[in-house]
Amino acid sequence: MEHELGYRVDTVQVDEVPAWDALSQGRGGRDPGGLGPPRAGAALRPATRRPSRDAGPLGVSGHIGWWVPKYFADAHPDVLDWKNLNKYAAQLRTPESGGKGQLLDGSPSYVTHDKALVKNLNLDYQVVFAGSEAAQITQIKQFAKDRKPFLTYWYEPQWLFNEVPMVEVKLPAYSEACGTKGEKDPDSVDCAYPTSELKKYLNAGFSRKGGDAASFLKKFRWTKKDQNEVAQLMAEDKLSAEDAAERWVKRHPDVWKKWVA
Image 1 (cartoon, rainbow, N blue to C red):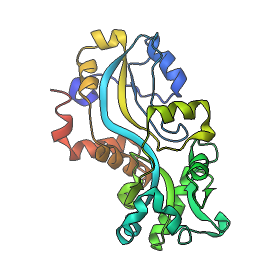
Image 2 (cartoon, one colour):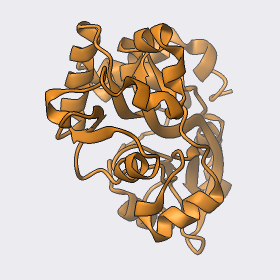
Image 3 (cartoon, rainbow, N blue to C red):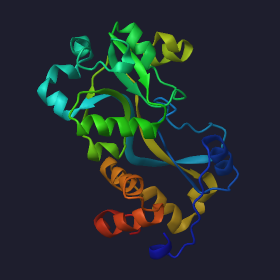
Image 4 (cartoon, one colour):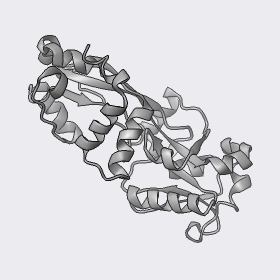
């Protein structure tokens, strides 16, 4: 927007609720949709009375689930059906899982359904918390380096898939009935996490009168692969957000030139 359209752009990191307040009051032009821990499967929902406008899909869907490394799935394809997980509990046992198979989670502060799923699906597993997302990533990388099997709670889009290919274990299909039941009683959940399409929202006035800037934001759309590429540059290569974006822009003019046309 700065180099191609001549705007001055300030980026501000704000928590979700203050972001919606700023958007409704005209203090923020755009709020990207987001999904990931600790909000298990929750889409970013605008309050209906706030003057914001749906600016279309980001191009990425967010999803939380259970994953195993691809090398383990290739060797044991039936592990990808939750009904067969108990068959592999002994192989997925760790010193921390108390004689059961380990389901690796991140921070205890994450709001997940994993303990309920283990109980309600009668799985011979123990949820083990790494303590944080960073610690979970470290553990996953170590398992992969040693070519050990593991089962982990994880989400997409996420750059770690670029380094450790993982395949999702199919849990009982999500349904609105299951979701509603889970909202009333989280301990009753017995289905998969939902998939949420991530969207962009603009302040209503800016959406109507924002000119080329609003047009750019409405056109902006990329893939999970694009997002993971930038995130990996920041997380692993330690690039700043601006440097990571600049590198991506240089690599993908065929994508972003459509946004400024």
